[in-house]
Length: 137
Image (cartoon, rainbow, N blue to C red):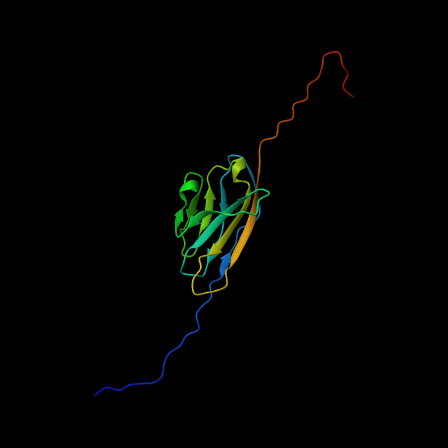
């Protein structure tokens, strides 16, 4: 004998949330930088980059892959579920700009993102030349 029920189990879809987001960072040339971002979503996050004084973002990390153009400059640390930290092992001036992490589009129509600025500074050397016979006051 078969029984048919007209009761359906419905659950509210869970909207993805950014659990952590990157912070504005100042780094010296050659320093290692890790920009943190994590999500509650099952889908991976994506990372984009815009150079200083630009609003045009280019893809760095999509669908769990570093883009070909960026493969030698970045890594993504995914040691924990939902964590997608963008890693720069040795910062140079070209890394300066705005980094944005955001959830990959899915059934959730709201796009969530967070961004941070990376400022890169070099080693500053101040050389003071003194001419012989000229007094320094």
